[in-house]
Image 1 (cartoon, rainbow, N blue to C red):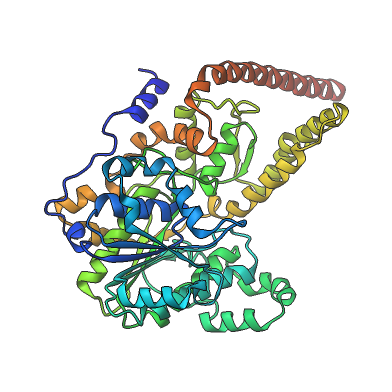
Image 2 (cartoon, rainbow, N blue to C red):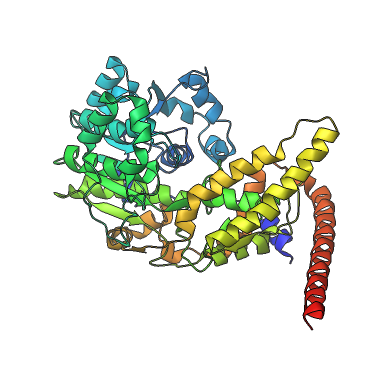
Length: 513
């Protein structure tokens, strides 16, 4: 069976979502009649979390989702549109009336007290048992003012609300494995923050924005961007304001498409590793500043969610005196590199190209920055200039240089994580997995040790094609014809290039001799 046939079989396989029986699941029993609050519910992880809670824990009482208005679209309307996403398909078939368990709360993590109304705050204090604080700005180059408001103040303010809750049982703060990326070895512990949470909030709120922006580079110091910096400071807010509360911190690494739940290889964004695959697969991204021998610290989205739910249960049951931290990474138990990642993606993806591709897959991962810059000039900018010139002559608006400026910005902000690696410890995460019953492991799988990367990558690129590029599988025959043409053209250009180089070398040596 060809790779393409195997991939299509897996994507179409009946019963892909194995509805495990809930008998003997302690986690499912724990969530009976519980009220849960989720921030960031319209984001990638937030959607997966809401879906899994309602599918795996059908007896949960209410799921309150804090949603902000966006581009003039009200919170309730945004949530209604959310349910049209393919990932809610299996849930809709199982529980057609699941929407009745969801309560939308209008809010905004960038505002004081998350922009919640007094009535909604009172409801939270009176009813909510479990918090999942997922909301964050994940833009690496976000303005310090915005990143601080959302990532730091939002965390502090939600913890202050949680502290007033009458029946609080667990609070899960979703951080990132790279909060302490200024260290080379990262344990499951709090580290000294670059600045105290309250100090940063006060400074940003009382200092003119222009001064804050001008001082950003000096302020973040050893941290590569405002995202990791503010997430590190947010953990200080958790340490201070979570003291005495049933709080835990989950630090996922680079989150990629789902493994199996609720759909194989589902994702809805182009962040991080996903952007690399889509950019290379469409023929736009031809060079990447990346050390292919370095660890690719990747974790599937559905496994992250299962880990978060298990961590909430453990926190509620054990009521730890010290705030537990879980590094959710892959390298400790299931190591693979960026070379492995791109090799698997290309192996399984080349037989399923997208009709939207503009050239054949030719990505080169360059360890040395200045070599990468030369590649960027000759493989990105010069072709873009020629194509834009052709568009201008055809009286069409030029666009390729704009596209490559965005690509350059994208690959520049993630190069820090593709050219460095860290030694992570994840003892707490392994202990959490080992503590679960057989039923809970079946319902909420998250052990990276038991994940098969070979199995994962069989459908990964097709998932990106279908859910991110929005390219229906019916276009495959046309895409294959286009792909073969690009392949032949690419081979011809390479051959001509090598002939020219050999001729120049021959001419040079002839003159010397």
